[in-house]
Every structure is written in structure tokens, then in C-alpha cells.
Amino acid sequence: MIDEGPESPGSEAGEDASDPEADLLGRRIEYLFSYVQPLGRRFTLQEVVDGIKKAAGPNDGTLSVGRLWALAKGKAPNPTVGTLRVLGEFFGVPLAYFIDDEVEARVSAQLALIAAMRTNDVRSVALRAAAVATMSTQGIEAVRSLIEQGDAADGGRPSGAAGPLPS
Image (cartoon, rainbow, N blue to C red; front, side, top):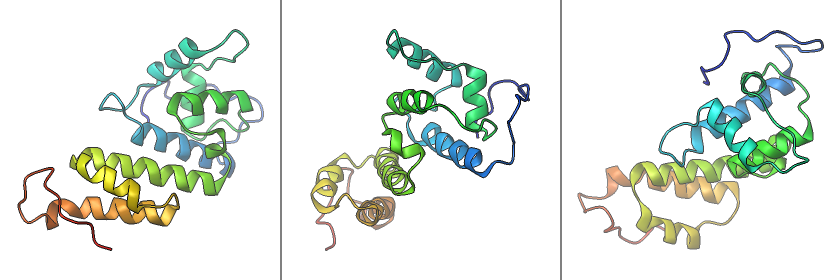
């Protein structure tokens, strides 16, 4: 979980720590912190806020570290569409990721696949996976599962010497 920021930011009027929608949003934001790691590590809250500010246009909203912390912890209900939009832009996910379960499932599966490929250094498999996997969640999950099993089943082949994928 995100462990940065104030221990307990001041509770604003109307905030409910047990709001299921806020909890769901917090889990989705945490997932992005866990799986979107172009720097090879998790972004800090400050890096996300700074990145959003840097990319913001003159009429775009801003996000504070405290507000981002509250969102990620599921303690800030009802964020604005603008807040979700800038978070989505920063992490490279569509706005619908935050509100549509089907979009969230598809994007999460794609992010998990990318993480599995990065972890197992299977760049050579990536091109095959693109040809084999459909854009369905099940297809992506199947490819991710194969990749995660690749180290155990590669028979000692050097990295990059993958055999044919099972059909």
C-alpha cells in the first residue's frame, strides 16, 4: 500500500472512510502505483503530483499530495471527473478505468501482462503474445499465465530462445 503522506489527513465534511465506492477507487489507484512503474520502481506521491502539474494545461485542475494520499487510501469519496482524468493521463489509462468494471478488468490484465513480461524478461515472447492474445481479458490472462510459467518450463534454454507457444 501507499505509505507516504500524513498519517491521518484532516477529515473533511462528508468524507466517510468506509464508503465502498471510495474503497474501490483507492484499490484501483493503488493497483496503478503497483503496476505502472516505468522507472523500475513505484512512483512516489510527490512524483505523481509533480507529473500532473507539469502536464497540466492552463485550465486543468491540480492535485495535492494529501488529496492523492486520501484517494489512494479510499478516504476521499466523490473525486471530480477532472481529478480522475489527470490521474488517468498520468498513468496512461482511460478515464473509464476508474468507473467501469469491464474497462478496469481489461486494463488491469494488460498491466499485469506487461509486469510479467518485464519481470521475466520475455521480450521475445511479447511479439508472439500480441499475435496470439485477443484484447479480451481471458486472452491476456492466458498469455500472462504462460509467461509466468515460462521460467519453470523453458528447459534451461537461454533467455530469448523461446520455442513455439502452445495452441
